[in-house]
Length: 318
Image (cartoon, one colour):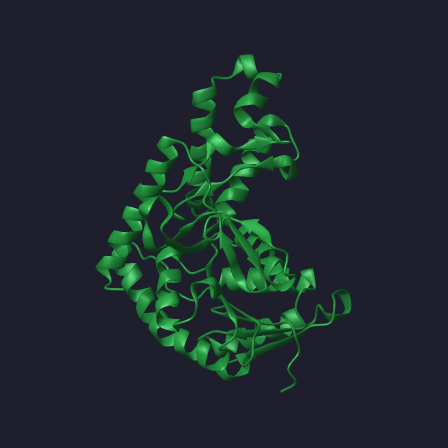
């Protein structure tokens, strides 16, 4: 098989994997995309359907294959994993998905030892750590999608509230991609102005309770996924584009700062866990994790996230 570069392989092609594949094709970032899924017949149909976009996009070869077809990938994106069933505990879900990772990570590394691994499967922080352990790769080459999507939701809602272009909002959701995540209000900025300083300039300042408004915005961020799942059954478009954003940072060697899930080794005394912090992302993976200065409440929130993830990791003996 001709090796076209950049080559990206997607392991697990459910709703998230396919939305990412479609957004990736539209972006023109890759010359070859390999789709790998247990449902081989369906994925062949998806490959044919996606291939018929050829007259409208940049040249890209799309392959419905298996692990040998992923050989020499530049980036491997992992969305494989079971969904949580009714009545199933989060711990049971983690156990199932860790077992899946035990099988697929060695196959990925065997065929593409130099690839960057981008983990998307949930719970993403635990499974990113599992991929790091099972792959024996340097931590900088194993990245979780982390709170990139949560942060996008946060910026969208802040922008909507302030009637500002979201591109001019700079704010993070950090920690766990899950229930213990938290907003970094102390560092949130609009147009280079700290949010707490911007508020008094806003025409809506007198008509809204600052504390209530902040609480409601974050609550809406946290419940977004649950609301979307309730209404349409799954979330996929937002994460698909979030993954393209991370992909661009890697393939274009951008040194972009993104709140991805990466190995924390000393920040606030926390070690050997994957959590989301702002990190510089480039073709080598994680160039540097930034030790962002948090206020006392935010520091405690980050420690709470670390404790939550640690308990899950211990429960599955990682």
